Image 1 (cartoon, helix red, strand yellow):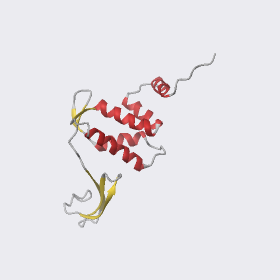
Image 2 (cartoon, one colour):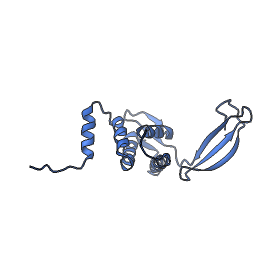
Image 3 (cartoon, rainbow, N blue to C red):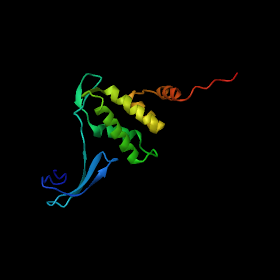
Image 4 (cartoon, rainbow, N blue to C red):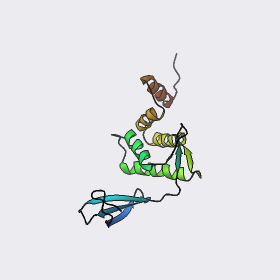
Length: 155
């Protein structure tokens, strides 16, 4: 593993332990050239996934991009980081087990929305505002009104 500080190729693993509910290995590494310490994560990748954008453009699936978008929607929410990691791993496992290597971006968005809805409604609405491209406050109102249970009005 190349040192991110000095570029040295010869780094040493100092500690390894399971991470993210035993679906990854966290490794603490040390660079003997510069003395830098850094952490890497090793995960099983069942297949190479390709995301098909709505424009038709194809790009490799990027777990980090998925994680960033989910963490942004969950900023300042009372959710433990481990729970977020579990959710992200669950989404990736679900995508990999679909049996397809080409996955439409809207399918990924639907799976993320479904997962967020079960964990935190505020994060769900935040993610939806970007995913569904809200343009005005009315878009939020309409979306949130769909979340609320319909109550009968008394006359």
